Length: 172
Image (cartoon, rainbow, N blue to C red; front, side, top):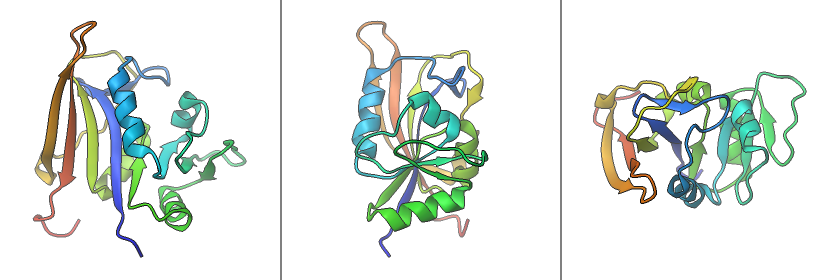
């Protein structure tokens, strides 16, 4: 079996907000370009609300939707009812070396303990929202990369950050 990295990919405000009314509370074009570049050709796992907010299966990626709703259908995506089943689906349908968890909050919460990497866009502002990125113990992660950027139009600062799970802490 091919070694596989399980990664979270999220954008969050300084106050951990990731969404409001099932949508992003900001428009950050460089983040969307990064999302596409990172996920293209790889499986992506998301919750039903995230799928519905996107509105379709994303081209060039195997989309897997996790929901508790029986009979739910998502055109162009596999629908499963647990994270474990979603991961099995990834392994059987692709030889990709990385799988991305793209949201929402509940899916991030469930997968964070088993993820190897987190790609986080840290937006250096607070936003109102109803979905938060789960807190995590920074002692379990090593920041391996940080790129600081600022939008020319409005001066909004954001950082592309990569965290890798520490491997020197024993078994998870």
